[in-house]
Image 1 (cartoon, rainbow, N blue to C red):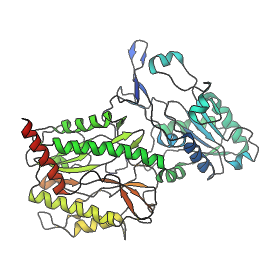
Image 2 (cartoon, rainbow, N blue to C red; image 1 turned 135 degrees about the vertical axis):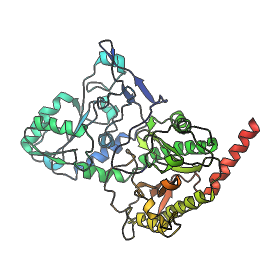
Image 3 (cartoon, rainbow, N blue to C red; image 1 turned 90 degrees about the horizontal axis):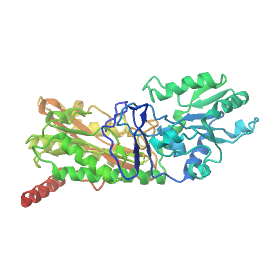
Image 4 (tube, helix red, strand yellow; image 1 turned 180 degrees about the vertical axis):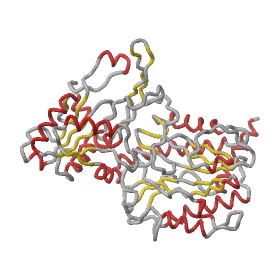
Length: 466
């Protein structure tokens, strides 16, 4: 999935074995459904350790808000917790908040708990429609949430007034002008704090949490691997079914079916299946065209498992055999990807510029092949090489930070030539290790000849079955 600074919409959401879907009906009218997902979480101790590390980096209280469940009025909306909040709590239900008190604030006279989870009180009538929720007064709430102190959300205002009397400042997730991140969630809660924080100065906490999120825990890597493996299964199935006459949406639908049957709760982003000219449209999401003989087809499709997102792209010949020109462009993109991956190591940088992995890929493309006018192909590589993945398909943190062990990033060079109706992108997910990298998508073939072999074998099997 190419980074463009915006959040892609989820195209479809289907029921899977660990997702509970409930509709809400109010006053006899069908309202937007609210969903709660039962995810495979990391141990409570992992979230507690993250909160402790974060609190140790600041000198003022931190307050974060989960999503309310009302951010999207669509009936197809499936609740996904605000990722920064989820990263620190593992809590995937609506209407929660978190308060963290650093030791330096506690030493100045704060007598309460150093971390408090705030939950809305249980509404039994609402739960008849939405299903059970965790309430602040539940006898097992501490065991379930991993918090020793759980209070009602209504208590947060008084607690903020108390800490403001000690330290007249606090940290939260503030909206940013650059990307309008978290709109309208961050704007709504920034406005709420302005009314309820007793005049405290509010500062941005996003950089500190984003930097933490870039280094994945063992548990996060396991969940990412589950998402990636299911997405690899889907791409292999697409290779085997691909043929002229299918519609783009048929391929996408089959890939999604594999994701959901394997336990994904959603797509990581709107599936991209683009044939012919559509292969040159970077975020093509109409997926309505019929695939023609001789087309090249870009498939950028990934699943989300327990909140963690895969991001994989393959480019296929519709009839199972690349034309000479398609093969030429494909091999250049493959070579650029391999050249960049050969340079992956701790300390490397993702972007363009001297020594950057993106520059390595661009230089390779510029030195291999020409367009129809004899010009280098680098101008057709119009996006970045890489981005982090995790709780977001374009995950949090500084994209220019040097690579470190534990980071998981994409490698996705591409060439898009509308004049020739040829678009090629190859995207894989890699884990940075102390000595280099591990290719998490290694099970999915990348070489053109290997793709053609899989497609030829599948065609033979289809013919034999007729």
